[in-house]
Length: 123
Image (cartoon, rainbow, N blue to C red; front, side):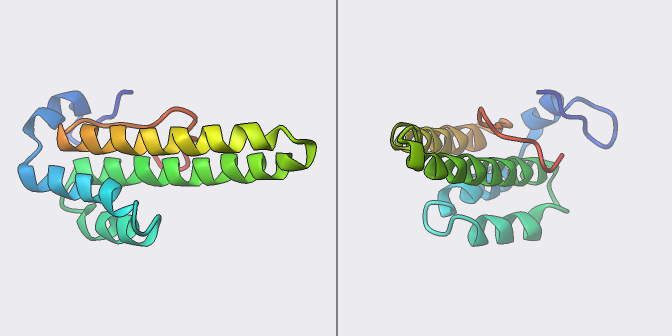
């Protein structure tokens, strides 16, 4: 994925200069999502998005991930009527957990991460 910084540089160049505080805030977006799926990550993102482009992109990626997987799991739950949902729902739940862990690691390393199957609602 290629993101562009407002000054025209590619975000891959910018992430090399991500501060410890920015990485911590991005990390907290993913970690707090285990306790409050939407409220705490949303608050962290809203409070820090103006100060850090890295936190802004991480928050948008998390929201895209959260909304997308909410949609996928809702569809999968509805498919339980035709029994296929009993297979797809646990698979999606496991994928969501694994992608949360990967998101934590990527945020700690100062890297952008948009999990697979995420629909880009926020750019």
